[in-house]
Amino acid sequence: MNQQWMRVIIAAILEIFWVIGLAHADSFWTWTGTIVALILSNYLMITAAQVLPAGTVYAVFVGLGTVGTVISEILFFSEPFRWEKILLIFLLLIGVIGLKLVTDHQVEEGEKM
Image (cartoon, rainbow, N blue to C red; front, side, top):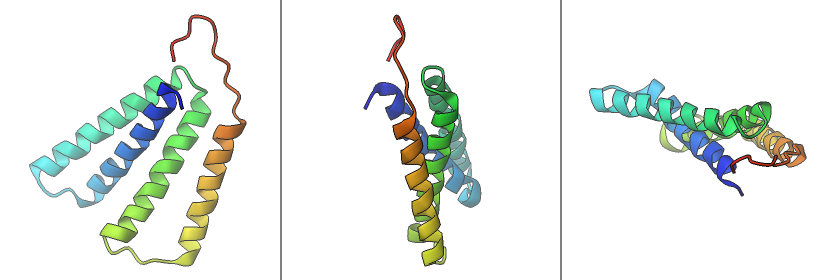
């Protein structure tokens, strides 16, 4: 996996933290962490989208962030577990992976990876 896709994955992980932070932050330090995660997450996604197809980057970023946020809310914040929700998350994840697999990105001469 190349460096740009690693940026997208790290950005999605940070997205999970800032989305949870928006819902649960209650002090100066939790709000600071939320804002730092938000800025860094978007920076990584934007820099990856300058090299990779922007639509695919955004779909992967949002898809992974959504899956991670919902699973984290169920595991750590007493969100009710529902099989329907898990099935839909699984379908979302299949779509994101499929989109990444069918996106053909040729490295152009002089392009950094």
